[in-house]
Image 1 (cartoon, one colour):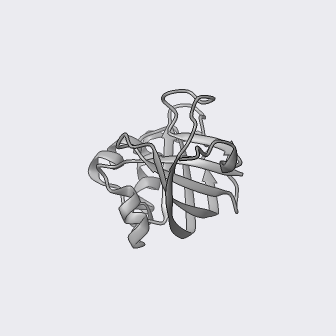
Image 2: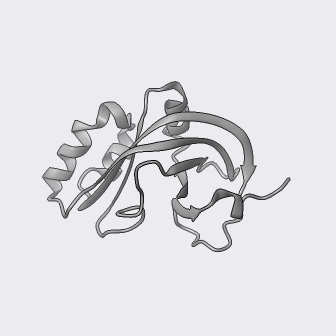
Length: 143
C-alpha cells in the first residue's frame, strides 16, 4: 500500500529524514483517524512538504507501526518523550502531539529522494495530511 504523507515544512521534517536525524513519523488525534490501523510494515510512504508546492519529494519504507489504544494525557506525553530521539520533533510539533488520546508511531527505513512530481488530490478531503492512495501511479500527474 502506498501512502502520501504531508510533513511540516517549518519543522524541517523532510530535511531531518533525509539527513537521518529522523526515522519515525507521528500522527495523533483525540479520536481514531488516519492513519490509525491503516498502515502496515512494508508499506511505502511518499513525502510532501506542507509548503504549498504540492510536490512529492521522497519516499521510504515502513519498518514498524505502533497504533496506541486510548491513552491518558500523561501516557501520551510520555510516549512522545520516549520516542523524541527518533521523531526529532521541534517544540511546536511536540506540543501538538503530546496529550493526544490516540498516537500512531511509524518507523521508516531506506529513505530515497525522488524526482519531484505532483499528485491529483481530487478524490481526497482538503485537510487530510495522510492519504492512503493504494498505488501512487494512479494519482501521479504527468508534467
